[in-house]
Image 1 (cartoon, helix red, strand yellow):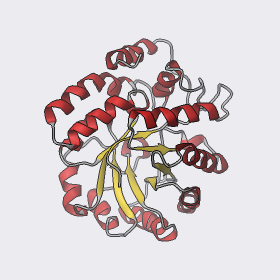
Image 2 (image 1 turned 135 degrees about the vertical axis):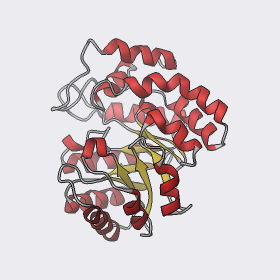
Image 3 (image 1 turned 30 degrees about the vertical axis):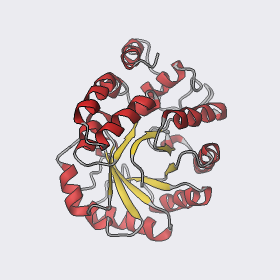
Length: 291
């Protein structure tokens, strides 16, 4: 459904934790101008874990309104409760989101059968295109390719954001899911090679800071131009790593605030990027040419 650089958008906040409406407007416009292929609102990078259900739905609605059809909005609607995931996915559908992105249930560590039944229940309850999201480093739950293959048979499960960084999964997922199933990297450091190996794009943290370069890298990789894709990605490599010197989205929220695009706010238990690490992130931003 989507091709290229999809930004895992931060949820901009003021220092007191309120949603920064002006910041959200600036960010949406920033990504439209930069050629970002889609905006993922209220995913992990969007601090979905600390927004209540009303806030979560409100940010999705506002992102869709601000996008105004200029760029598709994919709504993060995953939860570790199946009923909550269904409710959030309904919100996304009613708001006019183009698709929903559903992270595997976190903390409760379901079996592979539990994962299958969870996503099947959401897919059968809400008629909106749905993208699976596998990020075991954060959820303590790894959705195996065989389970993805089973879910790919459901008509409105259309792709997966695979964030293990394991490139061996790309051909295995393609084999099990077929050509019509979209594969997106969820790991910026390996995204270039992921797309060169046949993926459709990346749901990117780095794109919050360097959207034009991420768009350029993905465009080259999708065209099979390895030399250009690798050259552009080399400029981004510092960001791919330094935006994770503390837990995401701590560094990227600092970087976006430094660019003057959003307020300097983050919600507990996450904290602002510590002063000793800020020079590392700034150096990566300078290398990419964004400051």
